[in-house]
Length: 399
Image 1 (cartoon, rainbow, N blue to C red):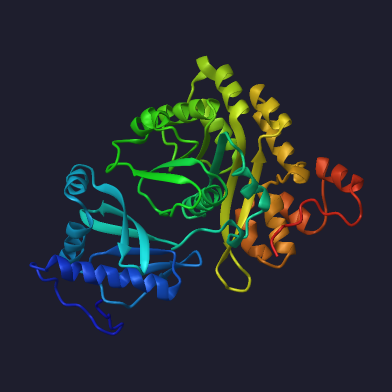
Image 2 (image 1 turned 30 degrees about the horizontal axis):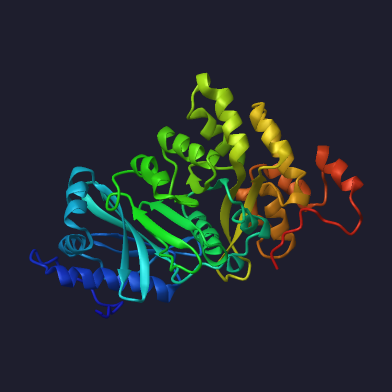
């Protein structure tokens, strides 16, 4: 592997860079992620590599790659069909491994006529749920034999890692058939008790909808959908959940209630009643996540919002009373539910996250400030007056 001197500078890029040289240089930047304990790498011609470490952007003085060096890497990293797709539509996701030292999800894109690269480090080995500092109630969702589990939140909040941990839990505890449909494949699962087939969109199948159309014929027990992006995928996923499959997926939504609302809106007003009934019947749980820097500087810790498919939650979804789901989460500590505000308060009171760090993440900053001062209003105040003195139903389960 090429060693990079941080004080070295590059001259003008050679117009005839060999593919292997471009590959070696980019792989050096990728492996630097491991040394820096970075989660992401951002690369563009003429600019030194930039990393994301513990959620923060870190610029470097490493040598800037040239245009031809990056192009040479792309020529090796992409298969012939993928190169054709990238030429037609200059946005593509791929998975890339550097020998046995690291695996990465790489997005290639164009900006102002120049090639850009964003890489995300994929942790190696099996993802153990107990290592993620998540409430146990999330892991328990994977014990369901059918229904829908969603993990939502912004990019980089740990959605894929959480789903990988849930799949691993199923893999080591049940003799079932797991089929994943991903774009791209990130975590590669070694079979334990389960039989696993992982399919990559653009390589093993044309699209999510087409893969889902045929997946039932492949006789799976568990189906992981990398992302539910359109109405066809969502409706097919719900249909599979209704017919006895366990579906795990992600969705673009900022919180659990918005996720429910977004799914229902994909059906349209004419099918709203049936959509509400189908979602209520299949919902196992929805998890909304954020990752916050720890006070000790040792990486990041998750804050979560959890909605479980309890009888009351399902009744409200069936009746379309989505605004009431927030109060269900606030009062659902006994079944493992919580709001993001409650999770943030727990992290702060346990000393894992500083209050000033958590505040920008709070969906209700005023409520967060009051709770941090030990003051509660509305149903919070009622619950506080009726609980036992030594109980704290919102206390974080993180140690």
